[in-house]
Length: 511
Image (cartoon, rainbow, N blue to C red):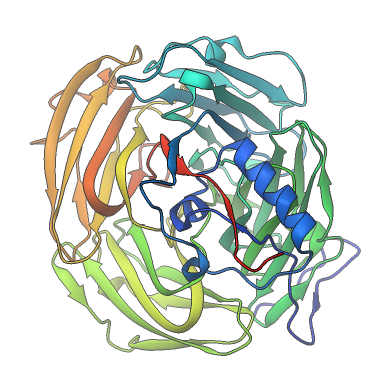
């Protein structure tokens, strides 16, 4: 590990043994937890009940969560997002937020509200646009986040995104990310707290009650004892920025677990890198799926150089992880990387050599203990992350244009079908008003990672300049990632727009 550089009065300290982190005992569906698919009200109620039932719980993994049943799903009535400005220190880099609701036959009525935080003034451009329209607004340099909430008939299918071209002091790269919803737990794999790579958490309380979060960090030498990392209070309808260097300085590679102990808090992570004094990229670090014995990091962008695989093992046993690579040509095991060991409560970085493939691919892993992971792709001036993700069915939204922060062009869609079946993906192009202007049905072969050009031959039939967003629909389970290369490098894992979700239930025997 590289020498630690002091960035604050308090250096990070290693923990001598394992530590149990306070957790919730109220469950929702595994897909909802992994993708953050909760409404602000549901999460707040779940966490409050959990706090009353049990103060300390075991580490949550993907296999702990119950399956969704048709009888438990219900159409959502409220959805809230904490859209982060790209902020590291001081003023935010120029950031644009985009909001839309899936076109279609949904109930009438309802409201949508948008507020800059700090501040109380409404953002009319986001609040008043009709269903299907693509609305955008700048967060402002003083803002830390933009709070978006839809209720009633406006809630189903509402999604929000954040994009920026970061200032040089914030890494200077392009960022595109899905605005997070409140969720009981988030994992970020690939964070850092050095001068060369620095990550900040943007914590946005979407409710009218105080929120409390705990942060756990795992470094290359084990679990890291963060100073002031537990009991972090986020006041109602405010956004708070927590730089990891304030909690544990000098860590080159980390996995970060954020547990919401109370309230409805949406968690995002901004990640910036530099080489010496030169900016070397920025990204909204996407959350990775909960630890599991089977993990797929989908949507590693095409690149002619090496990438970095980061695997986090939060358990108290060494993890033995087997690897395989899924490209457009099929699945294979890379020579010399048949398996890797990850120390207990630690994160391990592994170089994926350029010889694996210059094309886009996915990394599949099986482990004897639950792990989670990401892959960092670094160009000369920017970087992006592909993350462990859960497969999904339904309709997702892929941004094409977000104000001056994301211009049309240079977008690709990477699709990795789950299981042994091929996937048929329907792309529908929408202009700023929400009107459909083109469509295409594209195929992704089973056991592969297929790169699709939405605006190329066989695509939606119109130029990107006419399109604000695409809807991406699949009736079979897939993992999908949008990759943007026009102004740097950015990757956005796609997830279905929330329409119907399971209500939280109390774990049997918790009382």
